[in-house]
Length: 378
Image 1 (cartoon, one colour):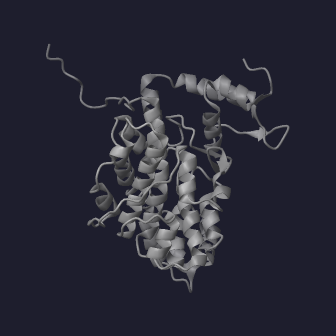
Image 2 (cartoon, rainbow, N blue to C red):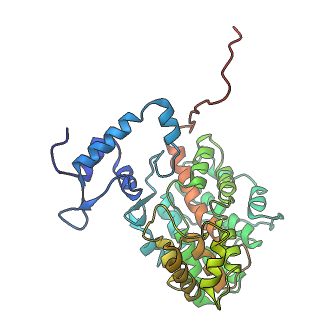
Image 3 (cartoon, rainbow, N blue to C red):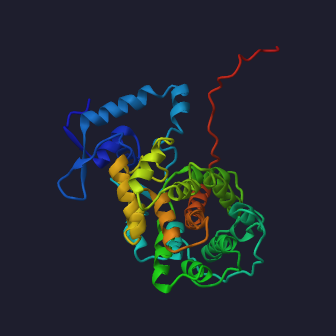
């Protein structure tokens, strides 16, 4: 029985037999509440609440319950040192990601998440054919320079950034150049220099977001010993779903349905045939997605629409809405919101693949069989 009224983070994690990052993940998902501690940087946890959670976890250790809960939204399934989501904010290796995005390039973000140098020569590339970004990138060559046998940091880092540059080339359908990635995008799309900084910030904000569906897919692929190119192909495939990165296409359709002369009326009309507004409400951020807030701070048109939607629905915008608002304000090609998401997130995918490789473990969940009774033939 826990007798102290409050526990420190370290003691709460020990009582639950979890790591500190997992404890913070429990808090961000509403499974446990953090109370102010003696200093602003400290939090305390009610002992009784920790005990209840520990009891609930111990009761659910039966195989069937474990299998059902293991992939439930919000329950961590792997430990990672890359991104923490805590108290309405998210952090790249302990650094506030929004603050970091205000000044960092995607290359600097890669160096932080990969813990590798990101310099290297650009490789010539013939712009590949294909209807989708996934098809164009998947048609590319394998990346021997990032094979599992490669341990030399400079060569591994150069190989990893080459993958990201190749994805940029597939997005822009032009050969990679040595300039920072946001500058290459701005040049290809004829974006004025004073708006190029928005692209840089958007790419950094997209870089990673813990164990979302695409990052988990990447880790599964990497755990088999596949190349990093193959892992990124897996991430792109998962991202293309309308419940993940291609939510941006749904946001675009919603935006097209809004009459900006009468936004509230057209919004209410939309809600008569749809249960939700795509791009609004994020279960990890009940008080608002900080990625969207950072982007919309420089996008007045999107901010005005977001305010109307929040007044009617009570929901706040998430990253998908912010990326579409960016695309529309800068008059970028249709589909660019998804492309920016994929390009930025490729840095996080590679980080997850490298981290998974380092564990040496194959990800192999078990299933609970619920089909017809097994008939023995013996």
